[in-house]
Length: 283
Image 1 (cartoon, rainbow, N blue to C red):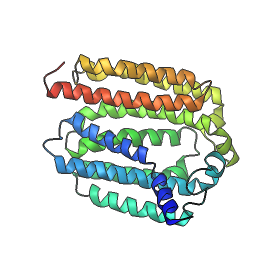
Image 2 (cartoon, helix red, strand yellow):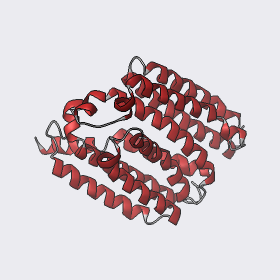
Image 3 (tube, rainbow, N blue to C red):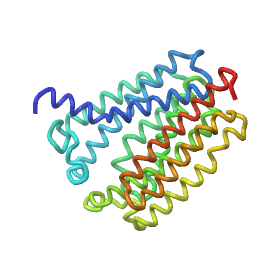
Image 4 (cartoon, one colour):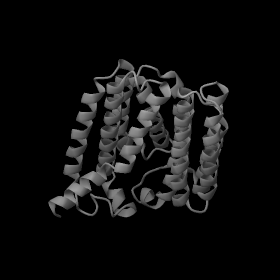
């Protein structure tokens, strides 16, 4: 492999799209909390720290998952030989270190969330990924906590709690569907994911029920008066996309989990629009 191919492989380890998405979610948490203008340096530090931590977590995930990926994802950087396992581990440690340095500049609650999240990112693949439901729940917490981290960075965590809960529910649904998609490789490696433990159809049914709960809970920010009707205008189509994705996953888990991701991003946009409407005097 050339130097260029190795550099590209290391970039792929971070999952740039996921890094950007998680950083945006942290920004959304701060924005929903209403602290962007008052705490620009803290928001910047939180956003960058999130991106670094997610990149590190993805890299170390590929390090631990390298044998599974030879079956499920042979095109990834380590299986195809662009990056050695040792390089991936070292790269992850550097990114984690930079994330910690930035996180330590934030308020104590944000530091506490960052500490828990960094430990969870490291522990996920090695200890929790193969445990039925627990690995899914941990990933759901990590995604939802990006909103809490952004809000904590500006010292106003309250409005982001609802967003955290809704994001966690949608994420655990998607993670279960992804486990159905990856069942062959997971079974080969001896993992005991939820679809393996209870069957694919039953796991998808649980995912669907969880998603329905999340959809039913999505109007809560409107009911509590956090946002006006503009929030509902955006969140209702997001709910529809996610429900459709859950149904589609019974026939095609890959397509279902992909559409669910789009629905989740649209739901996050609903919170941005809802907060922006308040900021500029809308409904």
